[in-house]
Image 1 (cartoon, rainbow, N blue to C red):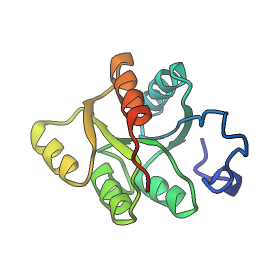
Image 2: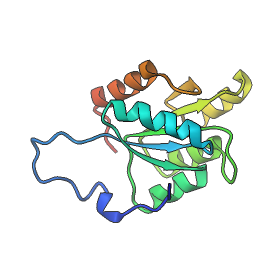
Image 3: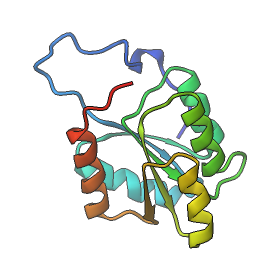
Image 4: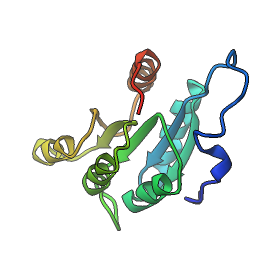
Length: 145
């Protein structure tokens, strides 16, 4: 899937009807197509709109182009820009989306990933319960940028 984002999906173009609940948007950042497919299917079970990119640089570029996501599922080990670098850069850009690190690497790597600015960390692949937990946290959050 392409990392091109339409400006019409930016947060400034919201529905004028306040009674319509805002649909949650998630960005899946992973170089593995199968993992992206699994995470996409899990998120859709909770009616979350999904977008996909293959590396951290594409995630950063999406945000620079005005895209906004309630949730970012960030893999650690990717080509071009890894999840640690992308998470740090997104946080430096004041992106306040909930970022959940998703990887299968050891504890030492996880600590530096968490220190880069993750909100949560999960083992890959996610489960229905993990996604439910993340969606509930977003819905229960009053966090705004």
